[in-house]
Image (cartoon, rainbow, N blue to C red):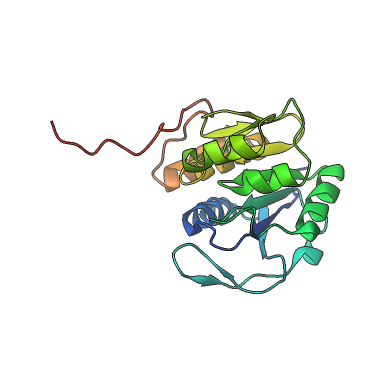
Length: 212
């Protein structure tokens, strides 16, 4: 459908990384800016419809609460520093309903913990999360297949981005699948960025900053 508007509901968890949010918003905004008709529409969501504090101390006003999620094309869950401590039964129910209604669900950074807690991950699902939290994820969900890729895409509609710039890689891949490579290439060029393949591996630990 040429004139279809694709909807993205972005769920912000307390202490979420604002860089991931900005990269998502900019990729969607630039796509709309380059076209006559609006292509992507996004809404910021919190569990209780109240402002959310990001990890850098900024407060973000949202467009509504979980009740405002109405079968969007995509739900993006951006996890925070305390993913399990801030879990919500209402959020899990919302994710399960959306998944049943064929919304694509993207987990960013520790958002993978919330998708696991919601019960949506099956034995075929391949997950990634930020390398800092990988060991904690394995301890909590030992039966889930987790890899070191920067992002993963599963046939069951679940996608995972490890966080940081990998969020942009995954969003550009989504744009490519929706509207084609020319669209995603335009966005990447506008952001002066060269997209990476999902098979790109994360660092095993902190960058080596020593000088030989």
